[in-house]
Image (cartoon, rainbow, N blue to C red; front, side):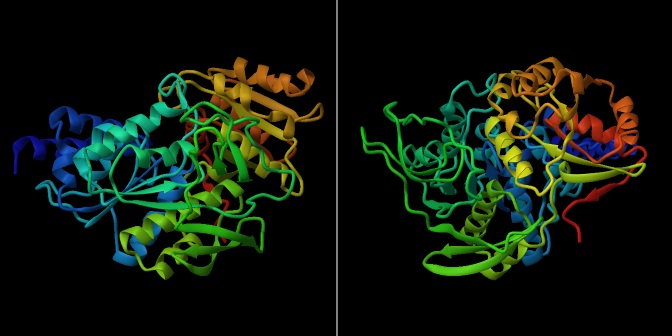
Length: 455
């Protein structure tokens, strides 16, 4: 046992406790301090343990929560981060908190959510049994300027972990192309039915083949660039999924029932998600769990009873006004969020839309220009814009048809909470990572969050 390792764990635990007393989530800085003391702390604490890593542009947090619920139910516990701090320092915090000062891990399992770019530094250190890649979309353009930048980081990481089994989205041509670059075993998942009601899904108008640049053709499409694709020019084509959702039934406000083909068997599972994009997360979770060897009944049961992450449909009762918090992160994810909202019986006409550009968000905000706000907002929609980049948000909403007379600016989060309390109707908050976290910090000072999914 090295002195550096002991010191790193001790400092991480002490700083975590101190920050929690101050009301902070305390998942980034403690791990950052641990890494300064012992650069190899992730490798040292990851050795000899069973690990599944989930990465991708959209869906990794929800997929991670599904997976960790199944692991906890089946094996009694796992190291994981409920706050989804998915950069290297957050992962270091998770492993340190799961360890004794002597460096002994309390749980045999670790369920790790990872930012796409972070995989290249820590994946070869942890050597996970399974890596799940949900989908890859153009996201945080300052860090990932092309569709394939994040993919290339992941490929680099996998080359340092040759025994890791890959669980890949067959419907995403970018994710699927990882399999062509590495020799690792691959398990494929996908969607073989329409995840949305007719007329709701949103598709990229034209998708260029990442192999040759020519337009792809689709036999079936889910949303954005996902579907059963084929390139008539170079022959690059969709893989048949080993685990696929083949039907969606009993759609309710918070849940539905899915039919899944698992290695040739047709099974039915209730799932406590309702948005079409979340069904991909269910398929990814099932595929990852089955690949790990978790019994299929245990894997399926977790889909109906997992705990959602904060900011995912979290609700606050602010002096009698219901405020629902929804997280947006990129163009594709936000468009699917809007699809879900417009499919509700009474879409909200009282919105708070906030935009920031911290590291966790991505410095560039140009992605907001591709969001189809016109699906949700109109001249009568009452909107408050906020966050450091409120001008970009305001311009995007005005282009979509929002009425400037019904829009105002509020950049002070404490004042925004007071504004919510004075609103006459429920409000839906749509915001990216830094802004929704800042608002939530103000909300929890006086109001307890209500899990939308809790019965």
